[in-house]
Length: 61
Image (cartoon, rainbow, N blue to C red; front, side, top):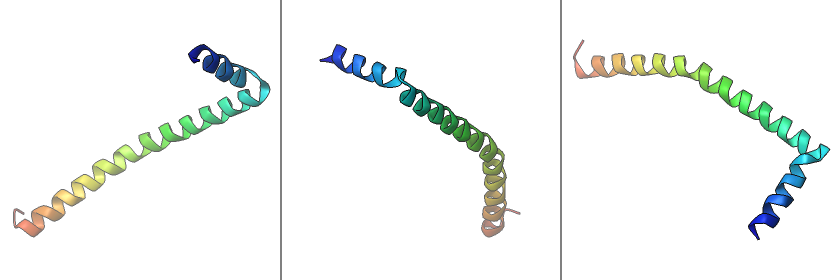
């Protein structure tokens, strides 16, 4: 059963239609990486702002 599934999946990805799907997958992965890399500095800035806000509310300023 497992060998049949592997053959079926590999046959699907080796035809032209499967090739297009893989290209779309690579594009999606690239977009996800760009989003992750670009949101990292935003996350740091938000963390700092929330820390400042918490300090002001707590009176630690």
